[in-house]
Amino acid sequence: MDLEEIKQLIALMKRNELTEFELEREGSKIRIKRGPNGGVHTETLPMISLPQGMAAAPAPAAVPVPTPPPVADTAEVKSPMVGTLYRSAAPDAAPFVEVGTEVHPDTVVCIIEAMKVMNEIKAEVKGVITEVLVENAKAVEFNQPLFRVRKSA
Image (tube, rainbow, N blue to C red):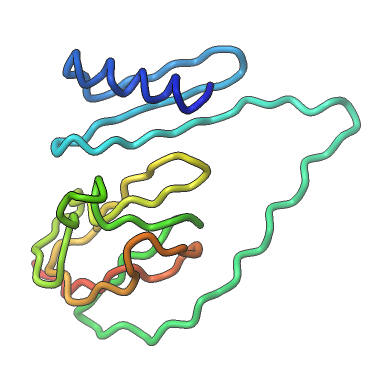
């Protein structure tokens, strides 16, 4: 499935006000979810069978990124993948969150593009953003801290 087909699926979802779509064909599977603010999360899962006797290459080891220890009542929103971070849904749109923004576990804080797929990253904690640690359109590593959040009950 190419990028143009994915864009057509997203447009079809918007026209029909669908929030979730899943398609499986020709050895691949794609799932698209739209959030309440119109953001899109896409997962493309290839189903590949290797020829007999051929083994898959091992995944590259992640390089740890040193970070200072967080304060007891704070949490860090960390990158779940390697990719490019975008703080807003479009270049001319406002950032999802800023310092001082109140967040909940389901609040989208940024998007990470990995292999041409846009992945919404959620806060996964309730609190207030105290620090933005990565600039817009910058590369991020697996487990790299992206935001600091002062936790609240």
